[in-house]
Image 1 (cartoon, helix red, strand yellow):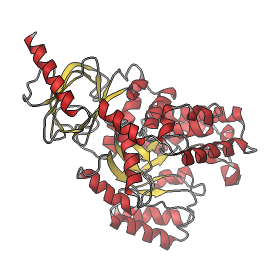
Image 2 (spheres, helix red, strand yellow; image 1 turned 180 degrees about the vertical axis):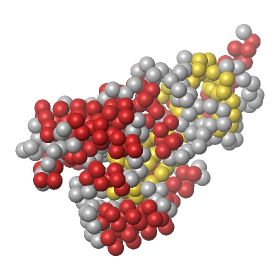
Image 3 (cartoon, rainbow, N blue to C red; image 1 turned 180 degrees about the horizontal axis):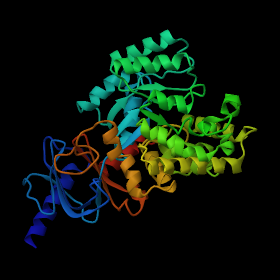
Image 4 (cartoon, helix red, strand yellow; image 1 turned 135 degrees about the vertical axis):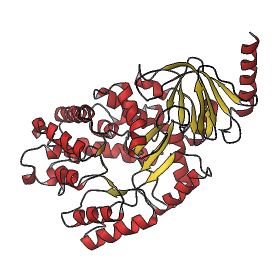
Length: 452
């Protein structure tokens, strides 16, 4: 009884002192008591654990551990602890406005997203990455591409080569490829990127195609871009403007007997895949209407101007004379089968939803992507791996993506078990980010500030 009283007293003092402020584990030890841990080393739950966090590292993990008397104690009885999640197709505003960038970062952070890969880079993002690393800006760990390579800004091989070298010298982590690249510019990007040692990621240009993209050695292909086109017979005789975004209008012509060959190519070339299924389901599917989004509580974090743009984008897709609701439903189902095929074939999947993009709100929609991955046939554990273990492997982040002694203490405390119901990732009690504990009270207060 006395021991329980001491724990409760410690909890009371910690809550009063720190509920509205982040607690820095570099200054004060943070202890999570009586928590059920999902370590992600394999599918299991470690029950009734004590987790000690010091200097942004897990200093102790076990059923009963001693900790310092001045530690900040979090009573997590009945709650679940998972590694921090990653968003591998994020968009940070590509401008000089640091405040707009901070808003997006905080939306991710308050949703337990502790690592992001920015997919439309800007020179200011390099500065932002450094500020986050130093703790001057609260936000997820940031990896960033440079400004995109596309058909408008890369028209010759010489331009392509120069742009690759410039971005490597500037310090970007990846090259972002967008549509419009040709069989003159694409090979120049690939050869120069391999020469200087910088990976290239993103879209697959129509004139390049998924098979050349595989041979070229993309680091990751995002959106399943080029997948469906690559299994449509006689694709070379179909004009690009007739195919629709991600082959929306020609998916009914796909030969699914070619899927095993596609999966083998991706696997053999170690190409990772970021499906962004949440983008496809919300933007294209007839059942996801603007009204559905406007009734989503997450909509209040997006400005009216942006919401209007998103609604218009949806209306434009549906108004296209080639748009067919029944065929679109089959397109969505085909994409789900491709995601499941990746999982079954051992192709590395990475969690990413493309937020903020049409009807996808930073942070919130990363959790939607988890739901869509499970709807595609993955188990909740496999979906969680795409946002934790897989990301750590892909980014070569040592001691990350798992919960064990000595690992990085990027953590999310949940009020339910996501291995039973993946929606439990949305019921967040607290976040450990870059050494700082963010309580539910703090998260609520910060989200309130971000409402539009």
